[in-house]
Length: 378
Image 1 (cartoon, rainbow, N blue to C red):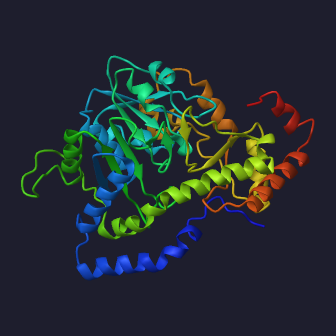
Image 2: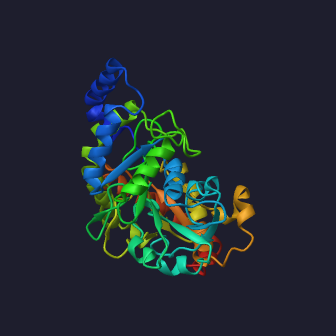
Image 3: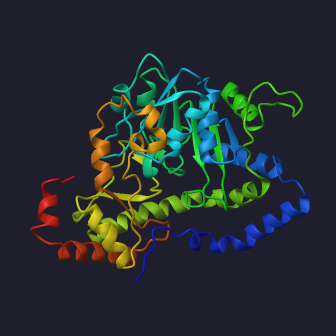
């Protein structure tokens, strides 16, 4: 039985009639940019998150750039960002004129912490990008206690909570991506800036529309970055499903536990006080390279995500010259593996994945791959 890495189609299938009707209504209405659907979605998402403001934008990468600029980040500044994350978390920094400074993560939670951020701070640090990696909330409050504003990159974590607060609303400003594979994904690109700060929200609205408040006077060099009406209409149908899908993802984690998978590989550890909505199910194992080949051959979706950390990516080499040691990042780059995760992943699916992992490990050469890797236990 095949078990795909993602299943973005099945969860939305029961909603197709409502989605189709909403799309038709937008087409009939003739408003496609910053219209009533965007306004309504921003209000509804803000209510869900418990935030004062949601400013929707074209994608999650723009959301980070705009959030940083709204915080006043600019040329000559530095922004601390983890090296073990998706490229966009750091790519979004240079367009502000600031320089990314790479920090390590905690090996177990796979997230930045106050300790890993503190090691990378300099007098030029203007902000930190804290990523809720794979759906696991970062401890944003602890990082902000260092005295530096935090942009919470919650792209992979919609639906997660930390100490009864929702991700994207854990600190001064948060960002979301609505890319189709995300926990709350639209049918294209989309993103949002989330904040309780009126001034940051207003600055984000100006920046997303060419640096203008009225479409006539232009006070900033801004961006053309707006969520369109069709995507907002779709997201309004999907948002009420998010908590149910989050529960399904947590049930999938439990199904893996019941199937015995955690006896074979090590799951990501939830941050203390967190209730994660696992955007991805990422495990640690010294056999990651072996399983990345064996599982797809058995019909099981699996892949590594960040085998080349950001400070070793060619495009980011101008900012990688003075990187501090990042031992957890280097270890995770070699030992992490994403396995199937979706809100409908059943116990039978978990059993299938577990059996494939067990078969691959049993087939490994005891004196070669398995034996040598045991010395590098994660």
